[in-house]
Amino acid sequence: MKNKVVLFFGSFIVLLTSCLGSSNEYIYEVSLNNQLLSFSLNSDSVEGLSDVKFTIDQLSNSVFNLDSMPVDTKIEKVLSSLTYGSAATGARFYQEATGDTIDYSEEDSVDFSKPVKILLYTGGSITRTYDAWINIHTQVPDSLVWTLYSDQLFSQPMNDMKVLTNKYTGTEDTYLMYARPAASRSYWLYTASMDSPDQWTEAALSGLPSEGLVLEQLSAFNNQLYVPASDGSLYVSDDQVTWRKVEGTPVVKAVLGGLKSSVNQPAVLATVIEDNGRLSFAALDTTGVWTVGAEVSSDFPISGFASSDMDLMYRERLIIAGGRTAGNQLVNTTWSTMDARTWANLTDASRTYFEKKEGANMAYYDDKFYLIGGMNESGKPSKDIYLSIDHGITWSRMDSLVVLPENFAARGFASMLVDKENYLCIFGGKTAKTASVLNEMWRGRVNRLGFERQ
Image (cartoon, rainbow, N blue to C red; front, side, top):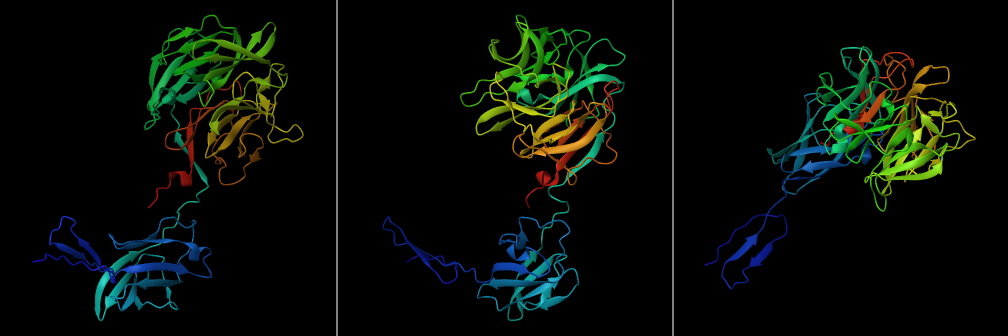
C-alpha cells in the first residue's frame, strides 16, 4: 500500500519516488490560491508613489514598503492595484482612517494615512486578512540634527583639552579627555563611558611636564598615544596614564597624525622636525625608526591645523586643513600624504574655499570630510560647516540641513570625533584663544544613519 501526503501548490504537483526501491510514493501538492500575490499604489498628487516597492510577508500577513518615503509625504486618497490567487473571489479594504470598508476597485481611492486591512474573501466568507501600511520618514534623511548632550563635562575651568576615544586599542566605548585645569600645574586624564558622557572619572598622569604640551596634536599611533611639547620633545604612553619621553628623537615641531598600515604601506606617525636648521617632514615607524622626508614648504601649517585620516582605494591617507605656518601666517589650504614624508597641496591656489583659520575641526563622516568652526586672523570664532566630497580638494559651505543650531556658540580649538553610533561629537572649544574651555558636549547625526530598516 502506498503512503500518500498531499499538499496543494496551486496548479503544479511534485512527484517524488524513493530511490531505494521502496513502494512509498510522496505527492506534494500545495495551494497558494488564497494569497495576495501583488500590491502597488499610485497617485498623480504623490510623487514617486508608483515606484515604491511593497513587500508582502505571507507569514505575518502584512504589506509594507521597506524603503520609507520622504518626510511629510501625504498618503490619503490613492489608487491601488493588486492581484490574488484564484481561490479568492474578491477583496475589500477596511480603512482605519475613516472606519469604512469598501470593495476593491482600481478606480476607487483608498485612504492610507493610517493602516488599511486588505480582506480576501470567497463567496461571503473572509478567507485571509492582511495588514497594509506605508512607511514614511519622520525626519529629513540628510538633515544633521544637533543636541547639547552635556553641559557638565568637568567641574572646574579648563585651559586646554583634547578628547579622543579608546578606539586605537581595538575597543570604542570610552571617551578619553586630556586636560589642564586652570587651577592646576599638571595635566589630568578624565574618562567617561560613551553612554554617560557627564560622569567623568579623573586620573593623575605621570611622566609629563607640568606645562608646555601641545594637547591639540595628541595622536594615536601603533596602539599608543603621542603628544609633543613646545620645547621639541615627544612623549608616549602605552596605558593612557603613564607617560615617558621618547629618547633619541629629533626636535619635534609638530605631530600631524597617525597613518595606519595598509597594502604595501607601513604604519607611521607623521611629524614635522627641525633637521639641520630647517623644517622637514619625518615619519616614525612602529620600531621607533625615524625617516626624514622632504623639506617643509613655507606655506605648510605646523600649528592650529585640523587633522583627520581616511582609507581610500586600500590606501591610508592623512589630511590636514587650515592652521598657521612656521612664519605665523594663517592658511586656508588642504594637504595630504600617504607616507608622512611627502605632502601634496590639494587646494587650487586660484580659489578660496574657506576663510583662513586656525583651530578648526575636521572629521571624515558620512563619506565626506566635515570642517567645522575655527578662528580667523582677528580671533573671531566661527560656527560654519564646510563639506568636501572629493577628499579635501574642494569645499562647500553649508547653509541648510547640517548647520549648527542658534544656541551653539561659535568656537575654535574644540575636539571633534565620530563615535560608534555614528554621532559627530564636539567637545569644549573656546570663544577666544585666551578663554577657558567651554563646558559642553554637542553631538549630531545625519538622520538616515540612525534609521533602522523595517
